[in-house]
Image (cartoon, rainbow, N blue to C red):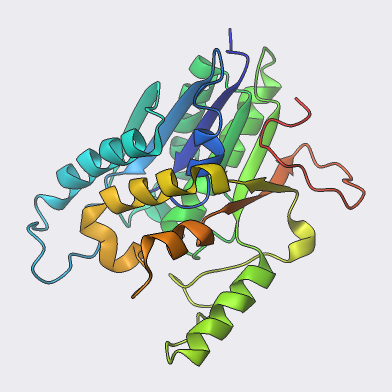
Length: 263
């Protein structure tokens, strides 16, 4: 039987969960019966390796698994189940979609979480691995839900507000950084503000979000905005946004303020 409040987060790489949902989960760390399941499809072994960083192509994947565990300890929430699907980084789009969905569905049927969180069709960065695992998770969620039984009452997609994207891009232009192109893979891909259904104030746990992000040491050159101090970074991650993928329902102009609100 599912716990009173439970969530499964399904992502492609070891740092995908650190930006966008870590704070929303950390807010519930002390809830009685809270259960957190983390599913990561690859170990991120094909990720960038910064010049001088003590990792090689052969060792990066194992290192990033350790970084993932350390990050969640810093976030203040250790996953109750941490599942690695062991696919090749960069290869999810080439995996049989039915196979990938079945792997995710197996976890969902065992765990029966209240909420499933993954990527939407934009992948947040347009990364083909993100898009593939998000699509597979959507398929798995609906297949598991149709079987009946408890849990699986809400499917959410992590998202970036268009207005936030525009504000950040304007800052990049002012400081001489190249602006993100939402049509280019690996750049940020926002969704219209009107599609956002959930906005979570994570300011009370923002330092823990940053602490977790800093544990992804091999990817700091990718994750850490250049020249940004930790206080400013904490302010930047003080809101998390989601699209309610299922069930779709009119919100009458009102945003939900917590992933579990209304359940």
